[in-house]
Image (cartoon, rainbow, N blue to C red; front, side, top):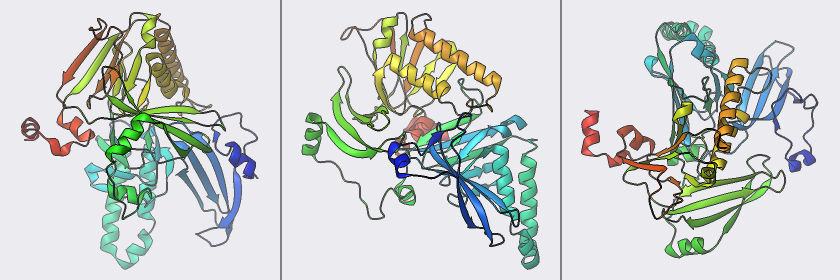
Length: 444
């Protein structure tokens, strides 16, 4: 049985990466009460890290007396700065095999059946689309024997609904699955990565005050105050330091924050975290200004290895496209970044290839692993100057930037296009109240 020691906690080794070589890393076993027969069973806890889902606690209970078992997954990582919503069009039976990480704070919806599983009514799960449907059916069937005895009409209606849910697994007709998670810690697999998944739409959203309260990150009576002018002056001239926890090992760390003016652009907030325990370093950038009136699409024609040294500011609302590779990375996938073009491409490679949870271990499909490895090799060739491509930053908020090495003169390799946001893009940016007459006509 594994023991969680103080040394493990302080050393940051409590949460281990999933892998086939961790023979010494065993789950923690705890004797606990069976809620079915009320005798003692065994709960096994495994603290691990899943890329895209941060740290998790996987628990499995089994009772040797009555045979009852149960598995759960809980996020042990921090709550993300934005909520996330996955909308999947399930068209084939193959879609039912997509891996899903569903946090307990997520709401699951199937609009075609007017079916919804509210947040906090189920524990978190690491499953597939089919597994989520089976879990919903099991939840509805749980109290059916009692209902048939006390309220036969209600029981009959629930039986009919269960049949509808079961029929969805045949995928005779297309249906929609929506997973909306204000914590930002849920995930739905893209089986065609690194290419864009046409059946899956991923959007980020700002949490409401009520959702912050439900997640425990805001008190009921907490009010958001505006920073005073002298506070902003202080931030411009000083590096602010505040205590936090390392996103990798969860050890105490410090985050430095500073307002920086980017030449020929605008003011941004740069936050850098350094961990003395595990050596992890990260930086995050947020725009210091408001959303621009127009969206911006910046296209760089990469023709020389020196292009890799260009400074890049990618905001949280910015998508990355490489048309020659048929690649698109949606907004907020990498968060805000202020780095070089080479650094940004390395981050893309780490996210899509090195840290992809569905090609790790023996369970990763060989063809998918091969495809992603080839994509990583193409990115390496771009970074070394062997392949020339077009690199596109598409930011509907207009808060992203790519260095013009010829400034203040125009850069012959950069094209900047300003465009009017669509109604859907305004919704993604939380600008619903800023509808124009054109958007209102579109809705009609």
